[in-house]
Image 1: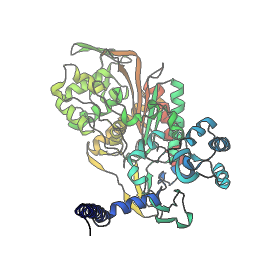
Image 2 (image 1 turned 180 degrees about the vertical axis):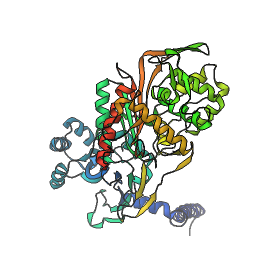
Image 3 (image 1 turned 180 degrees about the horizontal axis):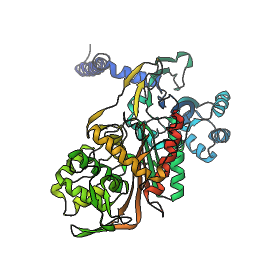
Image 4 (image 1 turned 30 degrees about the vertical axis):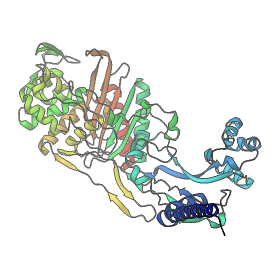
Length: 562
């Protein structure tokens, strides 16, 4: 018979037991019924390792499907320091194979709290094979891709580059990154209690989808011709920088685009921002006398001037709007066509005053100035073109000769192509199509885009004759190409100093032109930034046009006209 005290103690014990049992059952209910997925997920992460399988980045090809950028599969080496017993010995063995200092490898291998450290990324295949054959505990190899640019400097600012993780960082590599990068695959790898992979249970469940191919309008041979001629001209005149654009004036396709200084995208980590800059789209400048092409087009198009009209060029000095205009050499009375051919500032100023501010402004806007061309390249700036309401009294005489307006090289390409193709503004473009390399199927294609008609065919034909005359007897004589009639315009513009004054030692020299003059197939724009004396566009830029035009026509199979 239990005493009262014993019964009390027994009741308390039963109550404690029931409370503990209730707590355990409540905890089991929580784990098994209310939150089972959470704990299953933890168990899965402990026993299953998920490996990402990188896709092969798509290639960038020229119009003839020659590779400009492609990807290679290489092996990277990583380690799990928790499973490494002798880090010092392992560091000594791996140092010569990975071409890394032994001390740095030892520091990585000694980080015992880390389950993953990179030892080397994208090592040569021979070294990777030797490491694989050594079967080192805690050391693992994984396949990665590396971007390779087979032509080095060729079109480097256009192509750009991709980083270590195959992400596009510059140029078309960046703008086309979504198409090029593809989609990663996944592999589940079971692990034992010590977190070691069990190879027999490795299953590739989702294979990667490689990136798409991007085909450009560029022609590798024409690009090489343009780069070679630009390099020679750039070095000869000791310019600060330079660029060239070669295009099809009828379609707007960019056949070549090059800049100096340049760089090798295979070594992009050593490159300065100045070398990476695609000056043809990112840099604006006052164009100087090449802009007289627009003034002439507006004057003829509005009927303000006829081709045979004459203008007194005042023997090289003319007081107007509170300032003195000068010509690079004195002229008397010139016909309109010779005002352009001889690049008379005074004659062009008088032409512009006959046209008037509003018609001139509308005509310049119609040529696409003051806004981006819309080219499929990153970083384009639209330049500067102020409306007449913001013009000062002398502006009507300065804008017509290419001052108080800022443009880029592609806008000049668009301008000269209007004259060459019979009067249409055609958007410049460089990405031709996107294809699936696995099937060859066309994913997306791009076509020429005529934005609007700017001048009539008659005005375009007259300008073609005027610009051919500028090369034949005017300032562009050094652009003449044997066997063909070339047409174009020179430009030499003083650069603005930080104090707002025009420099007497820093110039932008340029030549814009097309060939053959009567049936143009090429538009070419050459810009030299701060060439040393002689700094005239007809001396430093026109010869580059000549060589590129001659070599490209020969490459394309055009026969001499004479």
